[in-house]
Length: 489
Image 1 (cartoon, helix red, strand yellow):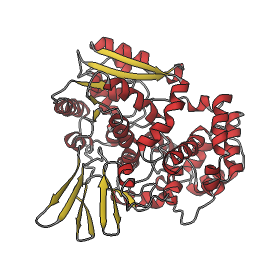
Image 2 (cartoon, helix red, strand yellow):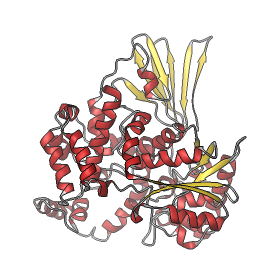
Image 3 (tube, one colour):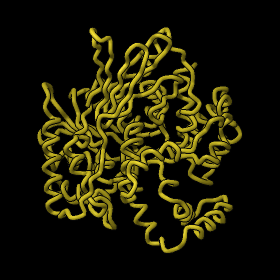
């Protein structure tokens, strides 16, 4: 993992390079005669030549993706260097090129048992390499298979977990149980509701850009408790993207069962069901079946549709469809199976803009170095050869990787469904205290600058009254407003 710059005094040329997967961030701005760069946007904003101005297109895209979509940022003129790219700057000219690409070389003839052995070997080698340090190294631990797999290599060392005081949103007991079985010194914290809400403005300041993934706050707290004991941690980021772990990756298999029905019929059915204002079982399936993968999948998150964005936003000028952003990535993986296509989209967008960014920001905010052994070139090299049946099948997701993990841990752990730092935002937004807090923000002058007040209030009230679950959409708007206060008020 790296993001570095080299200034060649003799040729007066600047070279900036970012690592293969985008584990470390890098931003830049060309302003007049100046070229300004840094690992955080906020340091670029401090430069006297930087004009701080909101990029309205970033807000439009954010409402679909739930994060600032690379390579643009929420600040006009400031860009992030993409992963696996280098930038050369000389005499006022910028040249950007890609030096590596995550390409899939699928081998349908692989044997399962042999593949599982190879995954276990290459992963353990990566963990051992990532554990090399002059200081003590610990690991994050949740109830999921990714961090648990990492933890199995940490006998007699320290692990860290956070949760909430709600059974459905608490991974602490699972983690404690596994840590005890492995023989680890375990540390955990239960985050109170008020703690979460009070720290949110600070989190958005650390993030530089609005980030509507509620788990980034949980990641901040787990980094905080880890930093009190160790200087370096290993974590499980990247496993889902490389080995096919997200539940949504099962979608092509479930849709295949009804693929004999022509798409025009699905489209007609979708038009009919969408006339019904309430959600019901099967409505989502019909809508998804009516679209091609390229039309329906823009990444792990897909919040507001174009129609919904036009309904709530005051400024939709120049708005582009999310599919225009994903188009070039789909072109790279033409001819591959749908699950692999979905992985490729997430590796290039979701993982960079959401998963890795929050991991870097929240750990660095606590002076903690976070390392990700799944995102190793050798691990990817093997993962890129796996056929779909070894990634997603009727039995599970991350199928082959789970089998490799099972060699090192109790069976019930490897079979657990992915939770991914679950946060009870849905529950909070139906409580008077937090409903009122969000409502106040939705009625603010800041909100009125960018949103149609009556529309976002309706979203909030429909959720509060239990008419439908709008929690993720509400959260995205609220987080933007909290962030906006930090950087523009």
